[in-house]
Length: 249
Image 1 (cartoon, rainbow, N blue to C red):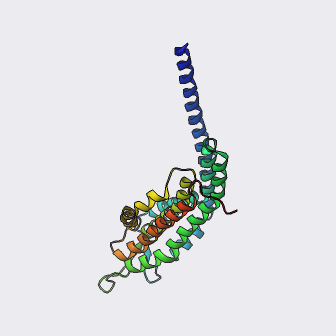
Image 2 (spheres, rainbow, N blue to C red; image 1 turned 45 degrees about the vertical axis):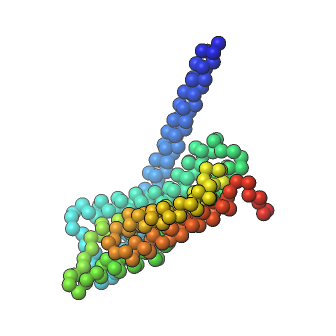
Image 3 (cartoon, helix red, strand yellow; image 1 turned 120 degrees about the vertical axis):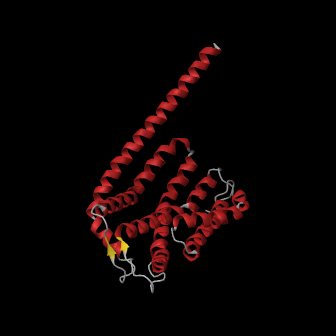
């Protein structure tokens, strides 16, 4: 009787695992379809995207193309990054649908309520990169010792530098939203986050150095300080979301 029960439990686990794998495959399939559609949309507006990105470069620095395939390659990269940004709401929606069965009713409410914040914080990070970091970084990089050399910049290097900075800064700015949700469902604790402030300070500058491929400490600091401030904000959001906190509503 015990052996039959164990076999039944093992079979149920296998069926559950198979169901999860099928669900993952379905969500990935929908996401790939959405990505193909957004790539087509991004390709249609690619000229406008290029004009927008090139406008950030200093006008006195010529933008050049070195190899015959460079323009095509960077064109597809821009379309891909643009498609990822456009498809992000759908990706998040698919992720929500996948993890929804494992959440309680309250946790689902929290998750749905945070979806708008995900987009707002991403846009906030992208805006910070575009209006604060990139002007300072490009001004430094393209005028460093310009009395000795004449600067020209490859269009591929310029575009990918800007796109990667904008995208990853948007991702980093999601930190308070993620910590709020994890604290709300009891995975993270604001006390633990507060104790890690020293390591977070070091990690902020490491992440800043990775995101900003510039050798000067000024540009690295421009990115690293906001990342650390986001970590401190995450402690606050985790404290607000702590389990057992009475709602003021």
